Length: 114
Length: 109
Image 1 (cartoon, each protein chain N blue to C red):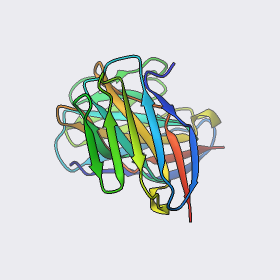
Image 2: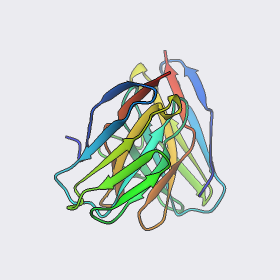
Image 3: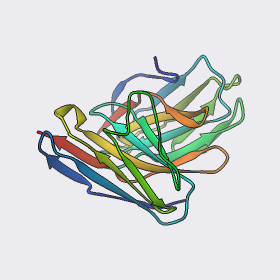
Image 4: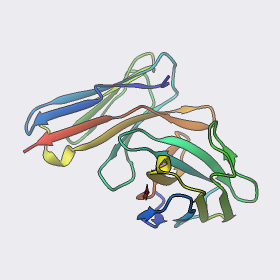
């Protein structure tokens, strides 16, 4: 299974600032997925990042707020822009494997916005 | 409305007791997955069930897929504090994976 590294693992940010989360995979993958997990909640898909094309965003998430880069097959970034306290969450990067589309996750980036 | 409904939402038990977590849907799934997430970590895949009526065992964990492939259960025998975590079921939904709301399990020593 893929090994996924995310950074930062946690950060405390000021309202109105932006933060970029990095995700590195130890193998080449076609699609990378970014999830948000609000406190005490399940996972919500933000967007799917394909190399060489624009990310596909889920309903309720927009590129201006969550710009994503996918410069190659092993790396992606998610930026949380103009943060507010409502953006305080764990952000998770993942890749899928196999016909059953099993997901493998990074350890997550816990953001706290003051 | 969640595509996958999990119950209970919270479960707190004493070490050595058994527990069951349920994952139900009105939709048919080609497969269902179970993940466990410990505090400060990302979810980790426990098992994938594919065939209706399938039962899979992973040490003290038993996973069952309903005959109609609309539901699944996770049973833990003789729970240990190391079983503490958030248990999530998930199933393919179009191009993505849909997650249940999760069951937070706490096993007290």
